[in-house]
Length: 172
Length: 395
Image (cartoon, rainbow over all chains, first blue to last red; front, side, top):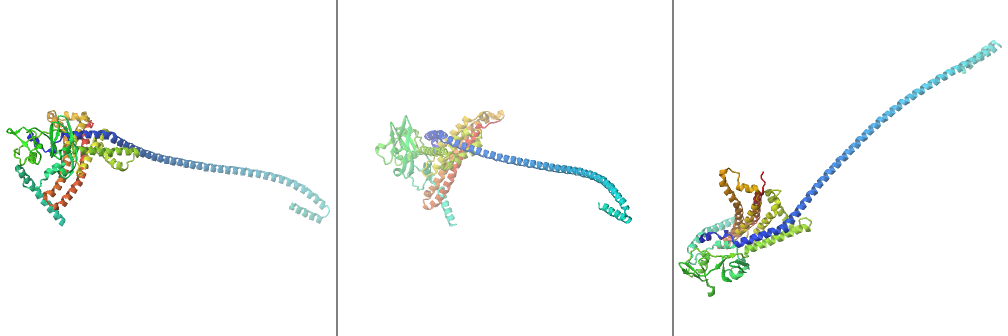
């Protein structure tokens, strides 16, 4: 049996002392590193990664918000524009209406005025005619009176007087 | 063109020498009772010595002139015994501790026993060459180290018939060896790096700067490319510290092993065994109903179950076993390749091989840098995969 043991290359014969010390060393290293190195390192790295993720997320959100704002601005602007257009249209319509109405009214007024004027003119004409008739009558009487007076003085002179009177009438 | 020809020639000569080498070695072993006359260089012991664990951290030089850091020896042999490995004087001296004597031989510590008959009731006395009388010592049959030891020290004293395989008693050795020291160094480096990274987050308000900027992508790589896809978004968090630790532990040790003079820790089967066993335990503890149900009540026809259940049970162990072997073999092989390429210079016994040898070493070293990361990645990935299989929800 001893012979067999010696046949094994010492290279692959683990020594108990080294097994003991490497086991103890490794476990101590594991415990120490876990507490003093890996925990703080991994915590720090995780925290940093989280903060980066958060920062990226919030940036993304801000971007989205900006997009939202822009789109709502756009919408507001469009609405305002539409409202303006509507108002303008309404105003234009109103203006047209007012103008049309004014025109209509003016026309009516004019017609009325014209009618009034016509009536007045008619009335004036009628009174003028009446007046003229009166005057003609008066004149006729005057003429008749003068003719009568003339005839009374001479034939020629009567004729000249009649002519003169007729001319006078014409002048009136 | 000329350069390529020279290179080819060098490679050819090197391979010829290599081809001759095993034969020489074989001859050596058949005539090992006598001094070897063959001058050919055998790189195998040197390579094995370099990739093996040791009781001192050796840098360069031989014996007393070597530059090395002695490490503490801790033995469990009828009580706890501690002393510096420098007391062995690189294996030249015995160390007496309480009632027992210890010797260092080929990086292993053996107990020196009392003298009892070794064969046919004859007492064996082994006297070390060039030593004083008081360093004479004896072995029991059970305590004599390998035949190599006998060959090294007894040649010339024909008191012992050599070529016999004998076992040796070894005390339970819990020494701080080169590999253990290497692990401590790696732990220190990893701990300092990542606690400073952890602190830097607080200081800079979560912004990765300097070192943190280099380390964070690696941590995130393990999290996002290993843990999350294999374990799942919901459950990965619990296992992430374990996966991160295992990844950086293996990677840093792989890299430290590549430094000349560094310890070959992840190329040692004991270390990979521990890592694999830890993985196995984590998987076993966290395995859910569906996972165990699949093992002990596989969805196969009734008559297949006597065969499938053992297969599934073996599967629990083969997965971590493959992890253990893969890491160990890859890293050890890398070291062996580099050392072999350097050994070419000594095998060919000419300086002219050096440029080709060094160029190849450089190439393999760069490759090993990649392998260091790759193996850490594969080990962690497969661990995550096994955990993922164990915690997966079946509907």
